[in-house]
Image 1: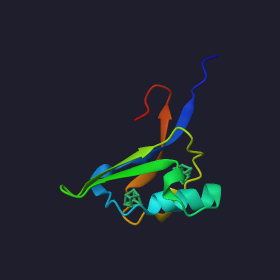
Image 2 (image 1 turned 60 degrees about the horizontal axis):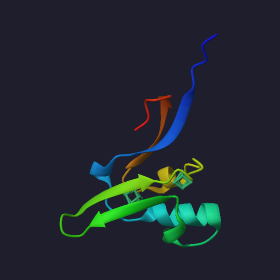
Image 3 (image 1 turned 135 degrees about the vertical axis):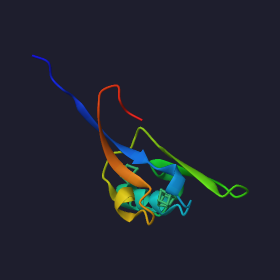
Length: 87
Ligand code: SF4
Ligand code: SF4
């Protein structure tokens, strides 16, 4: 029997990310009870010259979904993939 494996991960839509870093703060608060973006399980890179931002999610992400819930622009979502199809 062939089993279909579906995987979840945080999907980032960098084109609508404002670089506000709310997601970093929320992640550290929820998972480590500390307001410390440096230990968040995702990292926001903001270029002040181009005003472009990029978010990278760490493999230590536990998929709690709180960054998705609190992102003010909707730049984060939870995606479902078959094995080998991840972003
Ligand atoms: S992903 Fe959302 S919460 Fe995180 S920096 Fe971008 S706009 Fe802000
Ligand atoms: S889903 Fe949870 S653990 Fe993963 S980056 Fe977002 S807030 Fe952090």
